[in-house]
Length: 220
Image 1 (tube, one colour):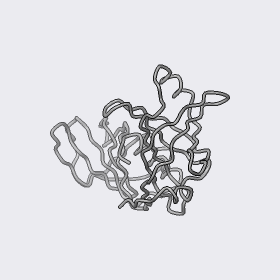
Image 2 (cartoon, one colour):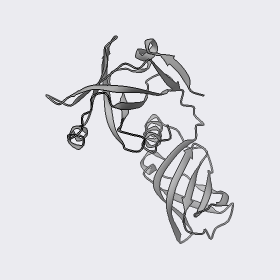
Image 3 (cartoon, rainbow, N blue to C red):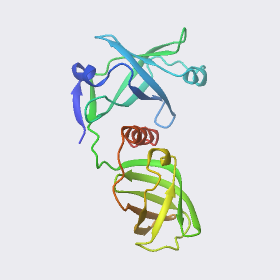
Image 4 (cartoon, rainbow, N blue to C red):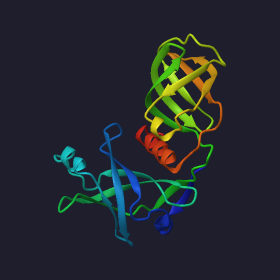
């Protein structure tokens, strides 16, 4: 379960150079997410983030002062804690490089990333069984298996050997044999549970990528 910390603990988790996800909230529906890099903080004053020029360009007609901002990131602790908090923007500096100044939050939450974590994600994926290829979405991933949804009724059965391809391929070993663990009919389509023959290695690169995909899908 996530733990709540006060602002005094923030510098234990936020270290200069870590990558963050910044979500600007202009209302309950209108939200925009950008990558950012934490530069540092001034005690009792502000947090400073390096943000992409795209943020400035896309929000050029908006006043960003005092809007709600949600920050998510992966700390450099031994376990690699996920941290998250909500704050408000002070102002944006455009030159010489785009910088976002934020109020220091009163509190934040953190959760250690465990080896057997199941990551909720949304990635385009193809599943192959013999000569049949199914297009769908990879909806979760762990070191022991993953979940795949498709609108196409499967012609395979539990226990059949399959393979899948997704943006995670470059972080996985070339061969990661797997089989069908379960098949469930959904209101729209099917949920396919996939079991890896042996647990995949959770490298730091894979862990970071999974967390970033989870952030992007709004599941962390």
